[in-house]
Amino acid sequence: MKLTFIGTGYVGLVTGACMAELGHTVVCADTDKQKIAKLKKGKMPIYEFGLEELVKKNVKEGRLSFTGLVDQAILESEVVFNAVGTPEDKKTGKADMQYVYRATEMFGKNLNGYKIFVNKSTVPVGTADACRDIILHTSRGKCEFDVVSNPEFLREGAAIKDFLNPDRVVVGVSSDRAKTIMSKIYRPIVRAGRPVVITDARSAELIKYAANAFLATKITFINEIANFCEKAGANVKEVARGIGLDGRIGSRFLYAGIGYGGSCFPKDVQALIQTGKEYGSAFCIAETVDKVNDAQKLRPIKFLKQHFKNLKGKTIAVWGLSFKPRTDDVREAPALYIVEALLAAGVKVRVFDPVAMKSFKALFPDKHLKYAENMYEAVRGADALLITTEWDEFRTAEYPELAARMRERVIIDGRNIFERREAEAEGFVYFGIGV
Image 1 (cartoon, one colour):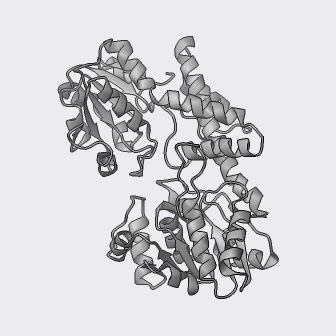
Image 2: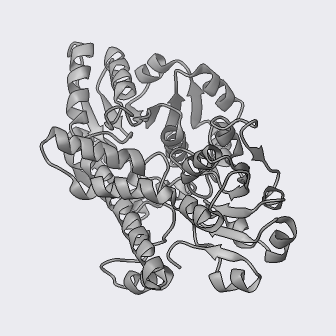
Image 3: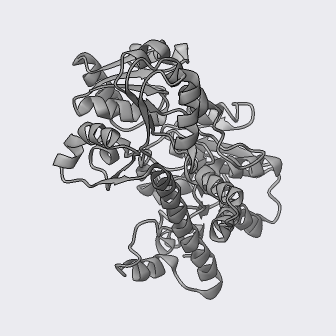
């Protein structure tokens, strides 16, 4: 089928490339002319494992193309996927819908026959109805159309795998015609034995928010257990293993640390809270999750102050800047809050991340911190090492190499990638999260 994706950010680019891989003819359209120019040259605007190869392959085979002519792309497509951003409105906590509604208007103005407008972006309950009204107004009812909710469930760092081998595909429709076409689009996924959940649009919209809020709650719960373990003398790794073996609970998302970040969980939890208020239904658990997670991000600062008393003039090395490994995304990453707090305390900060340094520099220029070429260079002369992202290469760090470069042997392990006994046996003071 001929598909258009409006928006070439993380969701639009990954999903568009994967749809092309399934055999569809895909046009990724964006009003950002510079981004389109780079994509046409094979340069990716984001880092995602396997994405560059997938894009180049499908461009070469003629199934994937890029354009800045959004109107034309809509005219020539059968189904239009809205994949623009829905960032958090910092004043209200609500999802900022201006980009979604702008894309909706463009769809309505260029409606030249029956088409489907698919909200792939994460949008609040009721958005499909709002989009339907906008399209009716802008198209003046000249052609039939359908609005579908088809939320994405892609984990950064494993997005291609998640799309091609999903736990489920959720599709919210209001007509049999739309159901038939959307089923055709996802037929290759169905053939692979993956379930497609067909429901109404409002339920599909809420499924995405409910899923992310639940996972955020699970992370926050184990972090609170970890904080209690530190006081009670228990080990959160053992606790998590013990409860994770219960089939009703499961082991995933039970890794204690310094909180969640990224482009989804923080804004989606906030958006759910605000949407609940609009409907007169309080999300008390989600509100607590948001509050606890904010505090958890700064837990390493507490350990540093506990050990050094006065941080001014100290040199702290930070390993990991992205909110999770295998991505360059630093949105709402704990490292942002930690580095800001360290600088405010008069600390000299040296940082390293395998792929997220460029993204971080946009927020913290060179004059504010020292960006090291590798992880061992980052710890040279450091009074403490602080780990904020669990990149695999950090797990294999050699203690003698660290000891030879650091001024003091102190490790603040915000992701519990090291073992306390090993670190202490090598003469390090070790602070973990609940271990």
